[in-house]
Image (tube, rainbow, N blue to C red; front, side, top):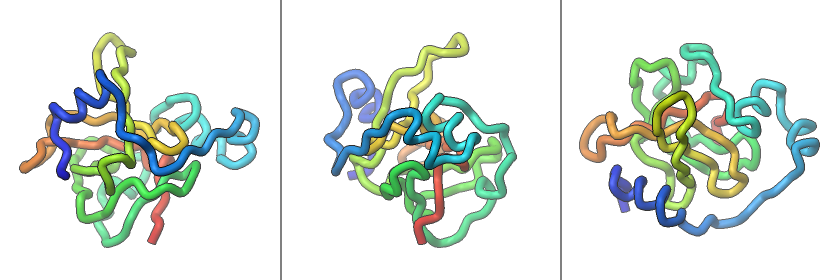
Amino acid sequence: MRLDWDTILKFADEGNPTPEATVRKTPEEWAKRLTPAQFQVTRAHGTERPFSSDMCSRIEPGRYACICCDFLLFDASEKFDSGTGWPSFTQPATENAVSYKADHSHGMTRIEALCNVCEAHLGHVFPDGPAPTGLRYCMNAVALKKAD
């Protein structure tokens, strides 16, 4: 199933798909596993500076997993250079890879994208991506790692 904006909004409002597994750790356990930048973004819901990683413009085959729990999140076949300064994808690897939450910070409403397995903050999803879905998963590079 290819996700669209209406489905994303429904997940954020009515509940997310069931994850394949769950991983829960204390903040102290996450801090031992992650770099300070990874912890700030994934566990404290931070945002890395735009254009701080070459991952945004590098389009190459492979898959991307969550830096926290190693769960597969995105396939490079859905990756595109959005010009925004953050890696962007049109779809997650599976319908239940990402969970969604309405984010009312910074005086606006956005849809936060989280790892559905460990609840790591990944970035946000917007309805301004390319056809056919129109989705742009705007991810923080430090929240992802190349899986293969």
